[in-house]
Amino acid sequence: MDVIALVQRFGKPDMFITMTYNPTWPEIKEHLWTTDETQNRPDLISRVFRAKVEELKTDISKRNIFGKIVAFMYTIEFQKRGLSHAHFLIILDNEYKLLTSESYDGITSAELPETYLDKKLRSLVLKHIMHGPCGNLNPTNSCMKKNDLCKFNYPKSFAEQITKGRDSYPIYKRRNTREVVKVWEQYLDNSWVVPYNSFLLGKFNCHMNVKVFSDIKVSPPEAAWRLFGFSISEMYPSIYYLQLHLRGQQFISFKGNTDINTIVNNPMIKKTMLTEFFQMNRIRPSILEKEAKEVFFERTITVSEEDILLHKKLNTKQLKAYNVIIDQVFSKKPGAFFIDDPGGTGKTFLYRALLETARSKGYIALATATSGVVASILPGGRTAHSRFKYLYTLMKISAATSANKVQLQV
Image (cartoon, rainbow, N blue to C red; front, side, top):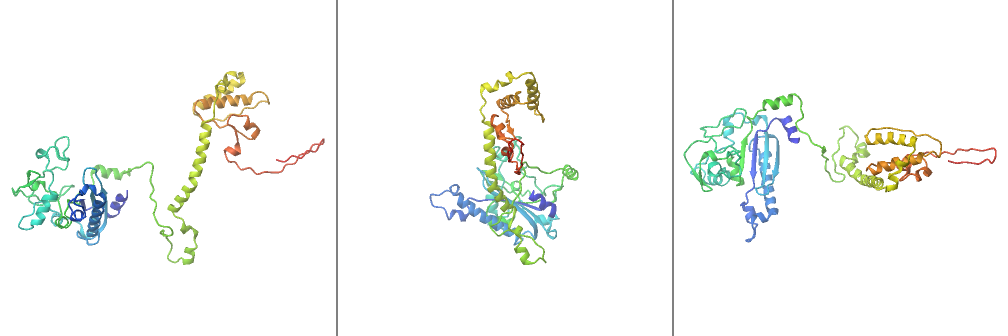
């Protein structure tokens, strides 16, 4: 989503760079013991590769080797069997946009360098830049699809000059010079050369694929999708990024004409989403633990076999009420029932039958009463203010009888 926001603000990317770490970099080799192997030193590999990525980032963003940029983004990918690599997307300032095929030619190349012009660059192209081989030369290469075709469409077609593609990648200059070179026991020509930048390849001595994106346009389905305002992505559950900061070093915002004492003495500046998140986690576990205990208690109330059979001992009126309530419970529909009858007619017996039937089916049945006396005769019973945390205001109520003038307090 962050990348989408950058594209919406600054426009589509102009260049795409893939940099793959080289296990034979001198910075790695010179720190290995004679008995060491590169794959056994992930600590060394990671530190050297990070240094290389940081240097590439400096070349792009500060030294402006491709011109002034307005935005860039990169991500590091790791593979269990492959080599770690970094992907860069670069958005150039309007003044430095790559608008012509000639401007592409100054950035990328897809041909074998002439030996007499740059022998070192030629050796680096042969070592890091040649694709495959794949296809008929090597059908088991990792880039091969089920239809026996390369997923990167190598070997490429020859082209006498670089041209802008039609809403796609440029067609890079790959002349048919009939020159072939031996790579991995196969003879390859310009059609197998991956687009590269001579300066970056010479400096970093690793696989450095440089592609131009300027000609890639939005497809008609994507345009319609965006016009309709359909969502591009979705995630569940949602994730919110918290600003990380050290204690007392968070960012704050204020108006320029605000008095400094007012700012410093404002208690709200000490609170951030991060600090409040920590505060919530200090309080929340105790609440969750208490709730979990209550749920566990309700689920572990013992239901005897005798209690399960209570409904078979109900009289006609009790059974009628029992059936109506139980049907409502098991149909998972909300409902409220009021049972009224004189004392001693079996209301508590009916309540017990309802509770035990529900609990025997795995339901949580909360037996709640307004007084402790009534709650004590119900299986698992509790008072309402205990279970639901009601707050009662105690009041003094006086009552007197003419006979003994008894004083009552509630």
